[in-house]
Image (tube, rainbow, N blue to C red):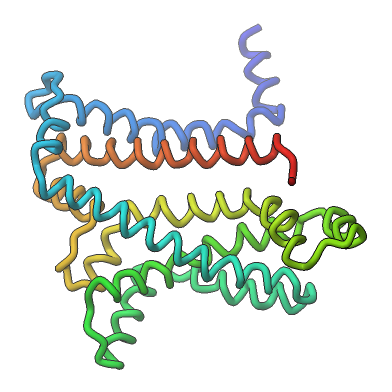
Length: 266
């Protein structure tokens, strides 16, 4: 009986999910469990909160954490200011032209982020622009702005045009149509773009190392340094703090989307 049930399961479509379940268990769930275990234990394996207390009592680590959040917010805001108009213009183009331009925006994402960052370093060196905080923000925007443009563009293209036509028939001005119809309906795409830009920005370290000659440390750099120095427990605690921040941002964005979907346009 058991063999027949196994045979039925293997021949059903449910069995197609088995490789994904195994992959998630080994490469997603297990690493997260290890991070939690290391974060709440010391080198001898004893349960402790000392790793988090060390972070709170270490001004440099706290300042780096706050600074990283600030850089991530600045990068996200710049990506919104540049990405939304670009996505809006692309959505207004003819289908063939817009798809080509969108492909040009997405194409750099297929190249390894280290190669793109090294190319940015070479560009700054060619124009004799000093590396530092400005170069860091430029590199962040350059690397992550496609993650802002595409979800907004995708939302604008799939938008129900009947709302816009109805507002125009009622005498709404172009500004009113944009602020009352287009902008609210495109907020799910904006929220997705914010998450896709904010999360990798807060955790990156390679871009900061290359574009500042390792003179500016982000929180991801602090985690990397502790793990490279075999301080696994403290590094895991820092990683868990970052995961909580990313999780809180994700929940906030999802709750905001649900409120907008449940409310009216006006």
